[in-house]
Image (cartoon, rainbow, N blue to C red; front, side):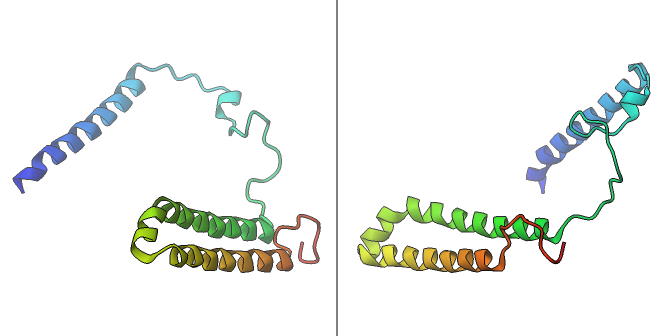
Length: 127
């Protein structure tokens, strides 16, 4: 338990420093609110419309497909890094065909996404 005291001390110092800086800025800082400062920032443009508009379902589908393919790419990196070790332990063919099966599954998923029309941005019947 004694070994955690430095961590607790650093946490207390960090929180104390943050709270102190906020209090000092409130006391000594200038507060001049204007209409421009109180307006929500939206990429330098004046906000128009309601912020509570619904997104198209296609947006969520594309986001999920991106996450799936991104995770697939993350699995390729460790395999590529450890390819030499895999060859030493399993021979030349096993690691190669193992990754080809993985890429084939990825390709099947990609074809499925294309056939479903997830990546088509034209107007559909559901929009």
